[in-house]
Length: 335
Image (cartoon, rainbow, N blue to C red; front, side, top):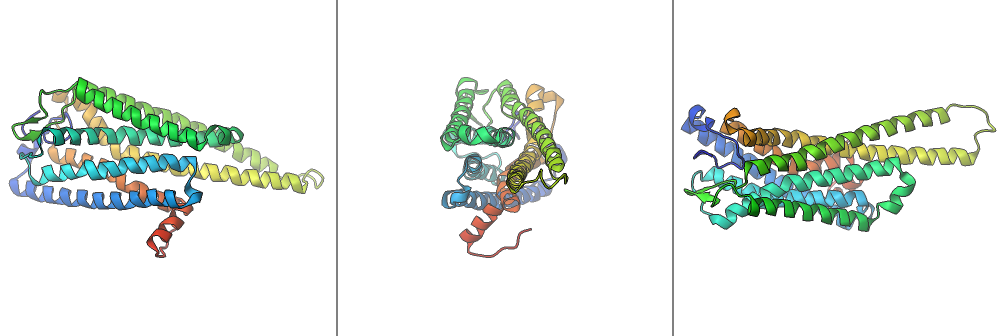
């Protein structure tokens, strides 16, 4: 890494010296710091609301929202324990004063954010697939205890994977060199982490949502055929009630799956630029020289995802909207 590389990556960012004037650099840092502070405030307030809504509203205490709660905790940890260090570095470049422990703590919190979020999203996607594909077995298989066990495994795996990388495969003898805090992870470990914790779950979720799409299309066709009038004798009140109930259930599950798909897509759009840049830079640093401003922009975009999730919940989920209104004791107008 060069002397300017105080970002959390193995990507060369020499462009800061060659393309930025001191005035532009100062203005850019102030702008980015302001954005990150806004993201921190929004992420903390929004995700605390999500956690409070799930804890206080019995209607929201279902297995799907257990994973949403876990995702909110991950976003809160990022906002509390990772973003503030970025603000510190941007305000005081080349003057890391936190020591070795805080430098490693920052790296640890940064590394654990994406895997836990991605795996929670994969778990909730699988939850929705099971609810649609095997509705009768779903409530017997996906019980609260099972969901909590899955969440515990996700966090234990993420903690173990991150700790192992930092302890077993550090890139430098010390994380703080010449008053700079470095991302002390072996580049090849970073590549493996991106492949296992980002690319693989992404492919799995693509398959899951393709299957959900096929099931939803088949259900829609079947219901359409059932709704075609045939004869009065073939349409008893009991059959009609069963069909209506099934139709509502299918629509409800498909709507929930669409909401999760939007949340997953937003996560991917926010994290893909940073992840791909880090991966390519780790494999071949000479192949990718990224302007520091562009890299910082990718980082801020990834962080913004932590603030977006509560907005998406409130926009697409009526129960969350109602819970947020009660918590705020205000009446907001939502679409």
